[in-house]
Image (cartoon, rainbow, N blue to C red; front, side, top):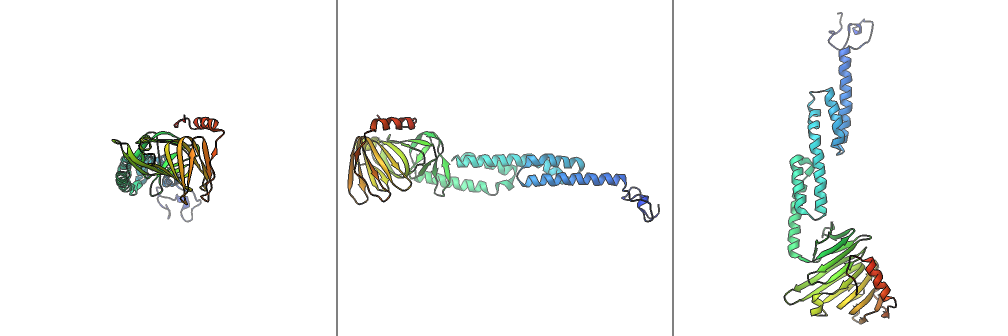
Length: 333
């Protein structure tokens, strides 16, 4: 056959030197077409796989394997894609559980991830386990002081690392934890001594002191308010000792005595105090005291100055408005 390759090779005899044509052998042509189809599908699948889209990649690897049934790489990806997809799903569930404060469930999910695809874990299980141990240690040092009786919308407490943990109905309220509420959110808290307060939207506060002896009802309650709207109904601690509850504000410290009171604080530290029943006194930063009686209100400025108490002419209307706005919270009598 002249100097041409065998007819089973790439070239026909017409393609041999001095031949009359440039045709490719039909079998070689088919092999080349199959390879190109394989390569196109394999590369497309690989691109999606590396974008963490294994189930989108799977049909491409299956098609690549159809063109090259013995290809080990395509076969491996066809078998591996469903496992990776499940591992990615579990990884997301682990993250959700962790953010919700369910550390044990997060670790369970992450252990399943590790069993399916160790590469996806990337050391996160060990990280979860370490953080869980730290959280348990912190819980021992900062025990619950009450519970979230009612939660509406996005309500969180912030960890020391700045991570937000969502608060749900009946979750414990931790001593010295910073609590934040989102736009339109509400939180009603009942402390162990039955002190009740409702936190409005866009609020930021910390319960920074809570001591309570249920046998004698003796103790202390203190909260620090940065911004937002709050309603307080004092509990057993205040009934035992009227000086035992303090609310820390930008302008001073508010003492609550058997009281239903509303406190509003703006971002700049200004705000107002409205007293519906009982008594309160505000110790200003310079040591002077301002006293409020039921039906009075007082405003304070961002510079810490405090105005003169005035009578709330619209107290009943405002009380009704508050009860409508905080339908899930404690109601004023």
